Image 1 (cartoon, rainbow, N blue to C red):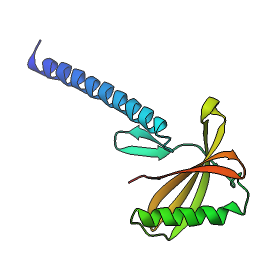
Image 2 (image 1 turned 90 degrees about the vertical axis):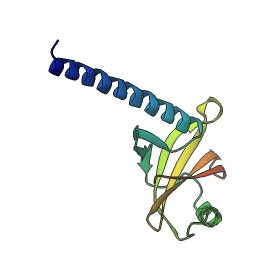
Image 3 (image 1 turned 120 degrees about the horizontal axis):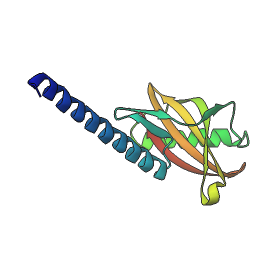
Length: 137
């Protein structure tokens, strides 16, 4: 085998190994994200995206929205970010909890150019569990 063919063979094997490693790493990162109930999933080693479908509004009762916004603002302030948040969208995530019975919403906020996401696990329209924040740097 001449040196050019050898170089191509080595390069091909190396490239294949890198792709297998990257795929395994992405699968591992996504499994960890799912376990942590993150609303993000890795697409490549350097890029993650929000999952779920955008929905027109929350299934929670309307009067809860101000309480939720106050809680988000307070949490943002506690992690040394501005509490000047704007709701961009709400996404429906895959159900979770025991037997996958709990509806989960991801509320996506803009905090002065930073995408910040909080999830709400809805036991019923009046009761929820609050998780987050998650960001996509």
